[in-house]
Image (cartoon, rainbow, N blue to C red; front, side, top):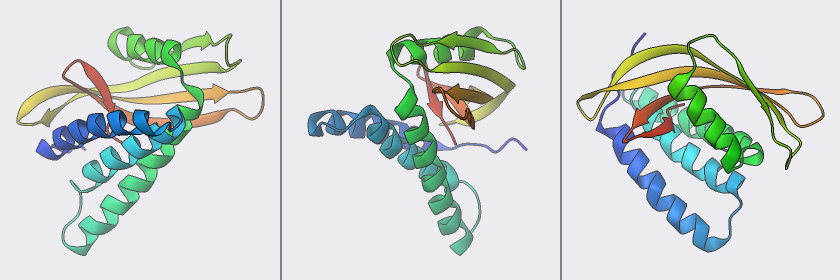
Length: 159
């Protein structure tokens, strides 16, 4: 089940950093910026699967899923929430839930790292984790599942 990630993920991460700089200058919202970054990374990861025309399809699906996840997280996460997520990704054992409330946005979060594993990014072993996050903004809770890998000290969504 472990898919070896290649230089593509690293290139996408670097591209995402450049995109973030450009998006900040255009006045895009955090949600819009994260949607763009999610789509870039999702496309790169999707390109790791399939062959020929199948690879094009997985890239498109990866871009769509990455864009959706980026927008969903971007709508809700601010810098304090990102800090909670980073702390949970770094320190919380698998299948242990971390909860917090953002008093500024009114959002309630439940974040659970579900599986830790090693993948290869740029020919180097890299720590990755699957996770589930429930976000409740006072209505129907929204469930987000994803994967992230630790690249250069930053958790990068890989799905």
